[in-house]
Length: 330
Image (cartoon, rainbow, N blue to C red):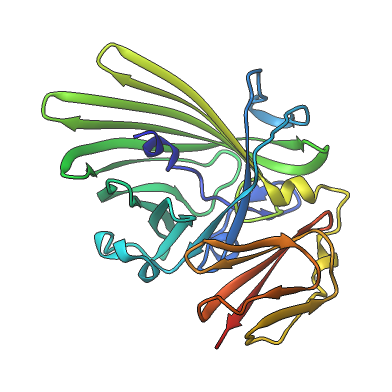
């Protein structure tokens, strides 16, 4: 049940304009093939959340011992559960544990639901949750009602709620490193979801703070406060994650230095090679978002035992993150 209230994460991205950031569909909508590498952080102290202009949100004192993980955007048809979400046109997967489905083909970003194979647990909105309307800039806001069903195995429950967002601040974000990102936009999202089964009711309320720069399509840092209420029992929790790309490439970094990497052969079989970069780590990710290789970058990768198909080659070092599509053949 915990994942329900973590799903309505802002899938915002922003372009850099002179005065402030603005989200636009044409420039920043997630598309098939996009990859996002994230790192989770724990915080027992106070994290910055002030609203307004000219803010400095300083997260530089936070630490983590957790490994980074990758989320990938894929076609809906790539997943066996696609038929449960007939209106979706984009899927986001986190390895093999969960797939989220959304609709992005219109002027809005809508959340259709999720599928988790254990159970299986399925949240399906017949009245989809409209996360936001393009464009989004300081002062933008919106609210939408959603309804559908949550099932776990043979148990089917009603699910309904309200999702709202508001762009509430602009300023500078400082991440651990420290890495400084200027001209960032703060967006606050609230979710109120009620799950009912007979006379039993489970209430979930979440307030999520998200910070975006022109660096990438996803936010560079976000955290959420969640309250679960079942009868008289109240449980509170906190979760935070940061963009691995933003942690590597701050204001002083030059991401473009990775653009000269050349991958060969492509299509490839047996061994994949490249020149232009041979430090840091390299990952190979299939179209379902599963990391099938994660190794030190030595300029080549053994792909002899991998199924044929399209993969994403991701290189990560102190200069930034680079993604290259590769076609593996027999």
